[in-house]
View (tube, rainbow, N blue to C red):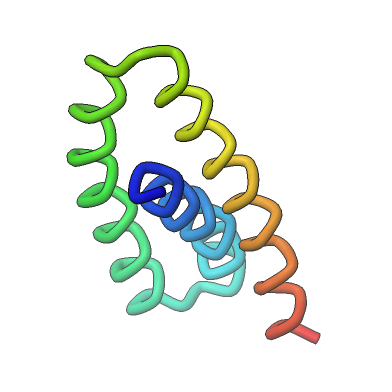
Length: 78
């Protein structure tokens, strides 16, 4: 579950950061980009030495996080 949540958060932030970049919110861009990179440092070490099941869980979290980020940003933007 922890692996799912970290990838969910990371990719959700990528979706949110895309909108922040488009709108030019510099502080938000910095915060999201920093957090994305910080999470990635931990995620890559966990996933690179994991088994197929863990890689699938990580990827599922990333897919769900991307969709969540899309809807979350659209909810805030409208």
